[in-house]
Image 1: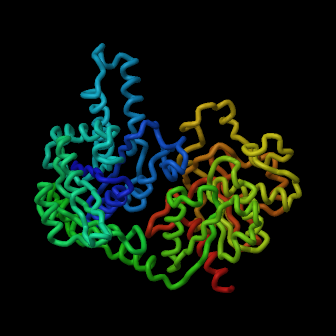
Image 2: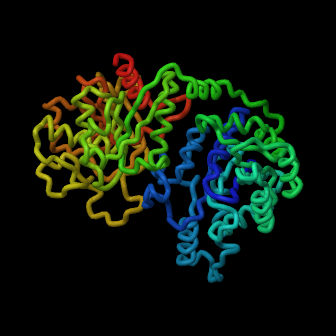
Image 3: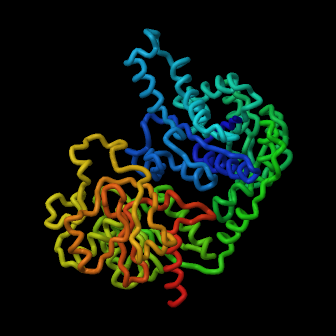
Length: 538
C-alpha cells in the first residue's frame, strides 16, 4: 500500500480536507482504489458532544461513529466507505494508552509520549491498511496547523511511519496560504516558507506544496517557493479559490497535474490519465443549470455554513440531477416564532427542517411545517424535522392540544415523540444515541417506496434519542398521516408522509449522509423535483 499524508500550515480552514478529497477523487478516476482517514488533535474522544458553533456538523458513518465533517467530503468525493477506524482524535489516542497502562499491557514500563503514544497513532494507520488490503492508496489528513503543540505527536508519528514503510511508499503534501496583500499589490510567499521550515524542523520534508491562493501562482513565486522549501518547481501546486462550487476543486488541482505528481512520487506512474467526463458534466450542471428553485432551510444554527453542510451538499446533488440551481434561503427558526412563518419564509418552492437538539426555535419549526402543509409547499423533515412534522400534525389536524416531544415538554398530555426505551437511564452524552446504519422496511404503494424505486428494504444512518410514540400511531393514521417505513428490527417509525400533499415527507434518519455528486439521495431528489414542479406552475 502507498500512503499520502496531508498537513496544513499558516492558518486553519485552508481546505486541507477538500484538497485531500480532491486528490482521492483524481486518483480514483485514474483507476486506483483509495481510502481516506482523518487525525484530529483535539482531546474530545469524538465531535459528538461538541456544539456546531465549535465544530460544524457531526458526520455519522455506517458503523455509528460520530466524526469530523471532512469525512463527509471524503465519502462524497470518493467511493470509499468510512468506519470509526478512519477518524482518530487525541482523545482516542490517550484513552487507548491509559487503558493499556491500567491493564498492564506495557509490562511495568514507564509510559511515555515516545514510543507509546506515537505507536498508538501508527497502529491506527497499520490497522486500516490491514483491514483494507485491496486499497492502493491510503490518504491521511492531519487536522490543525503545523507548529501547534497539540499536533506535534501526530507529526512525529508520521515521521517514524515513513521510515518504517520506506520513503518511496509515502508522499507528504503540505497545504499553505499565499496571502495577497492588497495595499502592496503582491502575493507573499514568506508564510509558506516559514510553515515548511517548521515542518522540516520536525523531521518531515514535504514532497508537494499546495498553495491556497486567491490569485493564480506566477512562475516567479513558484520558483521562489521551490528554492526556499527544497522541492522541485513542478511540485509547487496552486489551489485557487473556486468561483461556484467545491466540486470544481479536483478540476482546479488537475490544472497543475497534482495526480501525476503523486503517482510519480509513489511509483504508480503506469496508471492512465483521469477520465473526468462524468465529474465535469456534474460541475457544468451545477454552474449552468436550466432551472431554478428556492428552498427555505429553517434551523437553529442557520448562520453557520458548516452546521448543515451535508444537507446543503445533498441539495446541490439533487439540483444537478434535475439540471436545477437550488437557491437556499436560510431561515432562523426563532425569527419565525417572533414574526410568523409567512412573514419570515415568504414565497418559496420548498421548506426543509433539519435535525438538531434542544428546545430553542422549536415552535418556529412547528410553524414552518404548518405553513408548508397548509399551503401545499413541498416539505422535507430530517430527524428532528420529522418529529416536528408529527407534532404539528397532532396539534392541528388531530386536535391533540399541546402535543409535543418529551424532549421539550416532559409533562405534555400528548407525547407523540418520546425517549427511546433503551435511552432511559442513560447519563453519558457521548456515543449513547441510536447511531449508524439500520435496516428499514418500506411499505408498498407509498411515496417513499416510489422514491426508492420500489425497494422493499433500505439502510440509512441515524443519530437521535427520541422516537415516534407508537401509542399515538392509530390516532395519527386515522387522521391521514401515512407511516411508509419502519425499522426492520424494532418496528420503529422511520418515514412519515401525507399522500394528498404534493410532497410532505419526514425521515427519522439522516439521508444527507449518503448523497453523492452523481448519485443524489432519492429523498432529496424527490424533494427538489417536487419543488421544481411547484416553481414551474407558479
